[in-house]
Image (cartoon, rainbow over all chains, first blue to last red; front, side, top):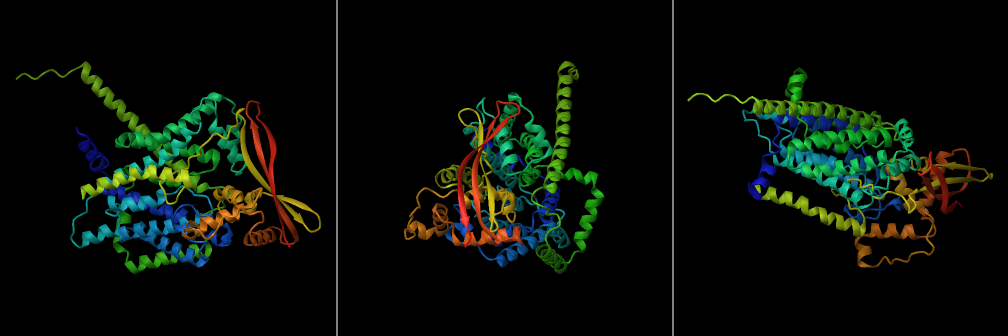
Length: 375
Length: 180
């Protein structure tokens, strides 16, 4: 296989995914966004322009923050786009609108000198719309079917691009660690960061207290190596979908550990890993529920959908999102991390069992070869 | 079409060194394909883990004093922002004020970054920040008259070779803000 063939196989073949799997993923993504993530950054209006400290980027051409009404309008657009995304109405437009709204809000929120690394929440809709995540369990798919059109195929390249983007992103976290002493056998970087989190940011849990009582160097060094290794493994396995999915699953436990000990739930990362989960298995488990969803989509009128989006926006922006709880504790993020670890465990057990079965059958094949048939 | 897609993959890869270059020269850009690096081990030469912390001493007109954390002071912003915001806005003033000109091409093109740098280097707190701080303290202590706030910076040092780890505090500077 030449380099070009190998590259083309990775880009156009390796990450082929079914439309139903992508459709279910879109519904899960939009549900998370609507229930947990929006509205965002309405707090910016509480601070004067003297706090303005922009990074290199779109806001460095300005001298202060926009007014509160600006964030209300952009959030309203994001909420309506997320509702359209949930039901798969004009999925491509909704995906792009949501991503741009979030990007605009983030650019201002990160102009206080601190960047939160949730770039995947913007990249997922931008990339996945090209994969065809609106081709199943969506109003778009129902409309096409009603018009007599054929079901649109999914594309593998956006999934490969998503995998590459996740791999590069995770490598951007691994490289500074590897270069700044995390691999030094005498340092305990994880311990220092847990201490910092406990004493300076005040994010401390029952697990943090128990963890900090451990004085074993071997234990703390293992955590340092494990963190760098798991983050680097994404890019190292990106060319093989099966291996990449195993790394995604292992990383779910890594994130659960961080959420339990440091109260930092990296849900944007988990949402990105979820793109590689084979969600179509749910069709055999909760097929009835998905059929109900499809029937519901067939009955929704466009004005009703847009009206619902506007109503959700109005409620969220007037009264707040009831699931956005106090900043001191993030039970929803922790619940998502726990759920992702459970899904990852099921996947890993299934993978190991399948490996054993394959190994056993190949061993059986070697020891007891089938007799050659007489010609 | 296939060629364009291949170029897109190439662009994703090529953008990475550029991103690292910008980060090294001018700080982390946004948007960028970057995740939290958590670089460094925070340990000094003796293996002690060391990090900077701050507490805010609120002085009232009747002579009483109360202490509040950065978390309470900045609770309107996400907790992820508190450390950086405190360091940028309320760090100890520099030894000498910076006189960065505002009439250079760079300052005119990127006024936000230049202004932000100038504010950080000033000995006196920006009037807008002072006004915000006054309002904020009034919200936190509605029935009391506040005279000023002192931001006390210190280094927490953990000697992890002892069990349990011994903690010491080393002063790292103060910024005093007096309200008129």
